[in-house]
Length: 195
Image: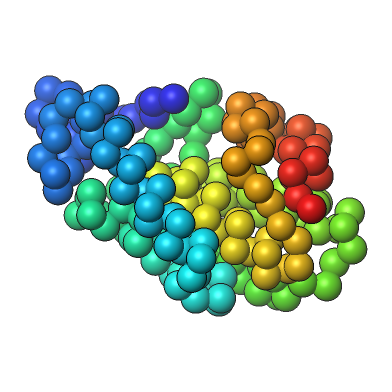
């Protein structure tokens, strides 16, 4: 689903919504295909050998950089424009760094959810997912970065999640509802997909 942008040509080729990319692809379908191939390969690298186990905001940015550095000059950098999607307005760019640091500091204070019972873990992982999703720190690739990060975090806490078996539409709908203050579907999603 495409983003709504306040600055429609920001980071895009003139007169288009196609992001300026290192492969100089001007066709949206071709760019999406290349993006999928590259990020799938790069994500598999991170899943088998995570960059770091620190789970801080800087490490989150490193995951994005690893996934997208072959495609975009701004990989791993905080976005500079306002974004919205499906009537959800994400955090303003000037607030991303400080809010991101607060979110990840809380994660550290909770020992990365390592000693929680299952119900507490589902509540916390759902809340964290919602917080990071609303932060939406990058111009593109937020969902893919979230999936890699959350797989690493969930495994670090002694659980597992299999993204190949889940319905991503349920996650998207749960995220939209969470943005309106209703967390039930998001919690159900994680409860049903975390083992």
